[in-house]
Amino acid sequence: MAYKVMRLRKYYDAIRSNQTFFKTSSKNRSKILFNIIKFLNNRGKIIINNKPVVAQIEPTSECNLDCEMCIREKIGVPIGSLSFEDFKKILDKLDCLFKIHLSGQGEPFLNKEIFQMIEYANNRGILINLSSNGTLLTNNIIDKICDTNIGEIAVSLDSVNKKNYEKIRKGAKFEKVLENIRKLNLELKKRNKETILSLSIVIMKKNIKELPEFISLANNLGVKKLIFQGLQEKQDYVEKYNPNAKQESVSELNHEIKEAVRNAKILAKNHGITIIFDEEKTFGCIWPWRSIYITWNGYVTPCCKILNYRKPCFGNILKEDFWKIWNGENYQSYRKLLRERKAPLACNGCNRV
Image (cartoon, one colour):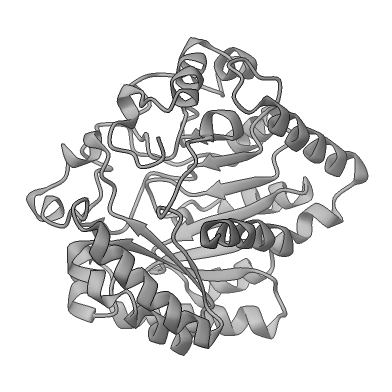
């Protein structure tokens, strides 16, 4: 029951914060809704006639930090940024999206055309969410955020302790990021924006006991939503982790995590804070039916957790026909395996399968 309530809360947040959908033309709304209906009817099929409902599009793979658990530079893919023109080309092919996550391996606000992308998506009735490390939330960026319609901004904050945080997020300053979050939150409220500001926490050995403490920190910052997610345990990630990151694995600590999350939820309820931890239970992966991940240079992978688009290569949406990719042999193979609750090679270790 708790899991279903949490999922309903996520859908509620998406609808509540999606002002652009209700402001777009009836033609756009109808196209989006009809595609959602087709997706619901296609669940479990191998060849489908709906387009993605949700897309995660990487605005850049460039980053200003060197995070302890990041494998960005170790997988050997090119580093660069998505151009506004290519973003428009992608949306012309994915013309009935309900939501876009503008995030990937890099820091979104390093892309100088990010707000053009947001505005373009806004005009098509698409909900925009993004994730940031919070270091670049200057007064100018905050002003631009408040001049657009963003559904949710999740700021990564993996410790309530300065020393731990700066060890994990190398290059970031704890006090400065907290100040940036406060300033953004105050300005959003001042302008009566519906944007949800949340904190995203990667659970590691070093911060499991801190999870309940995040409630007090979030409350002090005025943040009403926390997203907990375990350190990625997929086999291809673990193989590339540095020794420090490998020591932070929590795969054997399910009991400790559940206890910490349970205690955090008890405290959160008293402060009206929502906790999202959808690793507690899963009914199987639906990404190859509902969602798509697109790198800054147009390559398609079936999931945001498969960062190396060459293993396997599903295609490039900027160079190839969308339907040829979406219903190609690789997508058909993934849908078939996931329908049977079997893990494709690239998904080994994922808790969604």
